[in-house]
Image 1 (tube, one colour):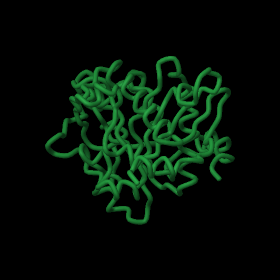
Image 2 (tube, helix red, strand yellow; image 1 turned 90 degrees about the vertical axis):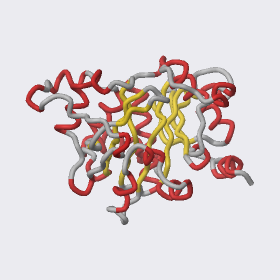
Image 3 (tube, rainbow, N blue to C red; image 1 turned 30 degrees about the vertical axis):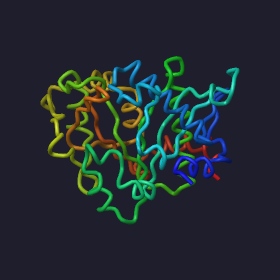
Amino acid sequence: MTLIEDLSARLAEVPVLGRIGPLEVRLARGADEVAAAQSIRFRVFYQEMGARPASLEALEERDADRFDAVCDHLLVIDTSLAGSERERIVGTYRLLTQENAAAAGGFYSQDEFELEALVARHPQRRFLELGRSCVLPAYRSKRTIELLWQGIWAYCRQRNIDVMTGCASFPGTVPAAHAEPLSFLAHFCQAEGPWYVRARQARYAAMDLMPREAINAKTALAAMPPLIKGYLRLGARFGDGCVVDPDFSTTDVLVILPVEAISERYIAYYGQEAERFAV
């Protein structure tokens, strides 16, 4: 049995993890839906945002890598659309558990950040890496973000996840173009002590591009990408240094979010509805 066939069998009967109006969130139920998620990623990352596809990706119009076969793929479904279930997929988020990362030789983010050192300092905690987040333009709303977090929270409850981590991105490959928000993260939101993580030396780019006293918090927050802003609201901290990814045309930062650090009001907000999907 291939990895993709094993994934199909493992996810054959996956329940809904959250619902808001006609939108629902659940895991992909087979290889066909994983392929649909990869197609949406291609549309957003390559056709819209200007990432550079490899020749096979360009030919198939799918964003795919070796991690897809060992990840769970969170999907946003618009049940009001006509067509097949696959044609109703409007967003996706990739979830990699610590156990599956070990089978794959490590987390995806380890290519950019010293994530293995962080995991080694917390042997009793279960880590989950979140990545490849994208939503089709018509669905980029607060409601869709809330639904994704509802699904992530239910998933974490099901699998007893202790720490969420992963890369989040600013558009473009010039960190100086995001000097104020990057500096805000560096001066006010950097993970410290046992949660400290650094970008790999060969790829390290400084984030503290402005002095602390020159930062206007209001304008810095307004300039944050929505995903990073959402992580901040939940109580996330960030790694030391950013990494330029020329293939995806992004500037990446590392998010560290222990479940215990999530604000009680957000647990109440997301958890109350998600709780019934977590069993």
